[in-house]
Amino acid sequence: MRLRLKHYLAGLAVLTLTVPVWARTYKESLALDKNTTIGSAQLKPGSYELTADDTKKELNILQNGKIIATVQGQWVKIPRKAGASEVDFDGDKITQTQFSGSAVSAVAQRGAGQNPRVPCPGRQLPSRCH
Image (cartoon, rainbow, N blue to C red; front, side, top):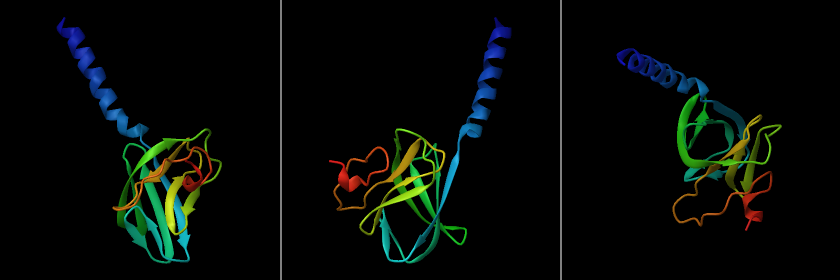
């Protein structure tokens, strides 16, 4: 009986250690030519990198390799894997980021005082989904 318990515990330990291997970090370069909002973060014109870990519900915004903001969000399943990375805008607000080769899309939560919208599947802008 003890031998089986040891085997189960060893198997559980190996499984626990391999879970981080399954996590994937997505990256997308972004060049802005005007002031833009993502969640509650205000971005000025410039070059940025968006990163997201599929085990977390947040999107990191980096500039020159440093995290300048972290935006809470959610992962939304899209009908098929994105062929290329894409950032969706609603006016001057970033609403959704699709990462190349992924079947999910990162949707930024709206800042305080903004009405939430239902995210769209596929490539439509969320302002068209209601």
